[in-house]
Image (cartoon, chains in turn red, orange):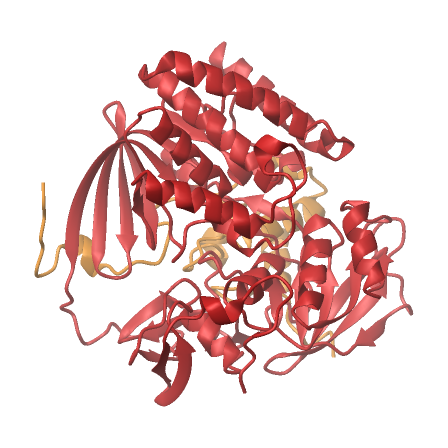
Length: 484
Length: 96
């Protein structure tokens, strides 16, 4: 079985694929292409179960695909707990299921390297916000470094095959994947310092600056001294509580997007989409483009949350959208074989007797995102729970300063929004950092003023009301704190 | 079918919805306490998948606003990483 996509209306996967290689999975050779992650290559060859859970030995599989959820941990070349969704496959690699309660590996000596790096501003996260921030910092002449834990920079942009809305300054009318190419092209041209495949595992305040510890693969430990931090770590997909919610085949919408739009692997044959916000609608459309039969979209709210343009596109493809409906359970033994859908009453409670089953092998969850704020929490920025922004966020002002000096944030980590607003926030945060450091102040002030104006334009649609309410709450909390 | 099928809240430590509800009813009413008695959020994902759900379950059980529920403290390491890297094993090529 090979579920790689070769025909796609937007992406030429044939052109993208690297050299054909082979690796061993539980001793059996599996074909892969260079540039694929271990998890993507396994999925393409029909493997759905990536491991067993620790107490009940329940199957675990593909879920977030960005190294955040832990469902894909395997033993790779003798090293346990490797996140196979962000680790690139190599020729001859040995990949195995791991014992959920493994013993310490016998091999206790492995090559490791400690590397010290110094920079003025460390940008953590290489998605739209982080990329736009580092390019602005570079343009302003601030010495900076970008750190990202994925094999590729670009964050969610590299999986967004749809065209953006907004203004010219925010790349309206251009597909996310193209925007990523533009930004990454600039990055390479400008010789910006970057650490890819490197996870920040700790941040400490040291004197007036910061010490960041990052791990690359399993052999390099970076100690990064920075004068300031710009956190653009994005978000994590929300989970829903329903029976069998952990069954392989229940995936986050972003995880599914990664699989089909980055690695060109068909995620399933028949899909159910849970959630009719923009993410749910867009990913349902993209699933259909990849040749997946999307049986329906269910939405717990009484009306569709996303843009009507997207809803209309989905409907034209014949995909029904059922509002006031939700998933009650997933069915299947080792992998999703179906789902139970139920109608909800006005109080969001399931109405008994309305249940029906759909036969699907993929349940895609698009039920919102939570800001990935752990670095900001760990370092001691004050947080507040702001439902309009997706959960707990670090308290900040409109210039994207947090409650700690020289710590800035941008993008979804500051409140769930869009890639276009994230890019604008990246510029604002970068300009603020330059102003605070006293580097190129006049130019930075101009950039900040211009970007604040652009951001305001991007937020002028009625869809942004919720975010604006959330942002205002956060700004006023910041004011209370800075006034003592 | 559905009664027997588990609802997993914490994927890393395999903690179910029912276990969390029971812990809350026994008086462990904050995410931090639930983390300590059940280990939710102590696994390799460090609570990224479960904490939002736990916050909601507590809010529902105690009839509280989710805003009142404080998240547990975040401590390093934030990602699974080999301990040998910190212990400074052989071939330590410290450059400075």
